[in-house]
Length: 238
Ligand code: 97T
Image (cartoon, rainbow, N blue to C red):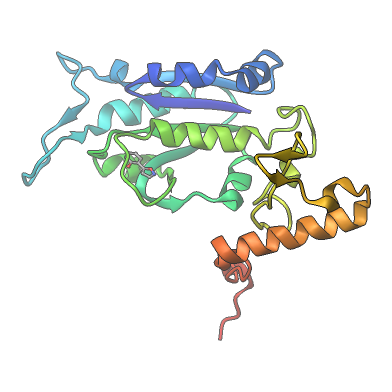
């Protein structure tokens, strides 16, 4: 899986990219990450990447040339065509189903803007998939890009040591319920005891208890997950 990241602040990624899980995945050749500063694609005298909005108003707008030309040159750097993703508050909301779709692409090109936004021609020319990570305002797309990378690489075969831990986690099992309580040693801490069933050795009873706890927690905290809305493809036309 190859990621190309277009950003004005590549240094934001260094701590994350050198973190152990991702470092190991890169060392083992499972994941490749390439950073590209689209300021280098600005041919302007002082390498300006933004400018004042036509029609007036506060803030600045990212100019189309550096972003479009950087994306085109980065595409040409590798024979595998990259799926273009633009991080923006106006995009499709990220969820695990979308993460699973993104993980199908062998190469993703993630375009990170600043909060001011891009000249509209970036969208019209590159036709990227536009993705938002949630309904809040960030200063730029970099953190959103890291969220996507973090969620996607967990689905790349071999990246997690334990092959089925990604399948067992909430939101990737068939039920997509929240996880219930978990315990480790000690058996009693500040008067709180580990539920007896977990010490019973009765695997079927443990499985039923966990499923029930998961259902209770989901009902209390995220009731909408128990009655998932029909997805678009399975809706009838009537
Ligand atoms: O708020 C943003 C600013 C720039 C790029 C992306 C975002 C954003 O992405 N998901 C939520 C907000």
